[in-house]
Length: 259
Image 1: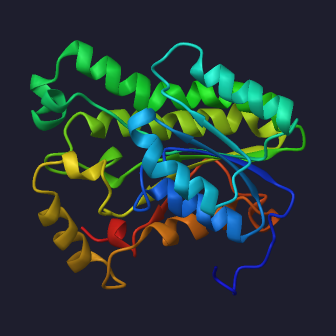
Image 2: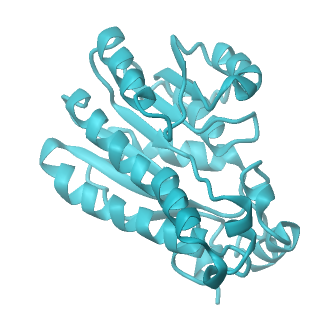
């Protein structure tokens, strides 16, 4: 535990969706929230993923764990129903999931199938809207929602392909949700980390080259890690950021400002 982190989120309840292993951005978020005192609900994609995620959930002392595949009817509703019955509230939501069929991801946008585009949009973007709809009634005293984006939402990144338009839609969704949920004191953030060595990123062509280029461009001269992202989200979930909502927050060492 980082001794510099004070328990500013004590009593807060956080649902973190998207942990695949200890290199996941979602794990960095969960760990930072826990260090700040929050209680966690953690999900895994399926039984295959469970053996990697469940030990992490135990390490984080998560009282609520569950399987969650947002493409399976009823699973998302079941998770929120359990949170409502167990906690009666939710203060923080992290959506850190993305998917596109491999053929559609590795081909150019012109080659992306309608089915592949629709699936990528549903899992990577619309599932956040569905989560927000279920989470909002549990955020009785306000709350904070996070969705993970990437620089390729706003600039062309070679080989990012279909995920560029999908992440652009996700960032736009965050803006509109921030507008709609603002009267309920619910804040919504798109978080845009620099490139990280995660399992999800490994599906991108020439990803090592992307990492090297990002490190060279960053004004701070180095890549970020999952805890950099986690601590940023932990800050945004505190009252210190109570007037911040709707924007895309870059956690990339400044890479996004360099042409």
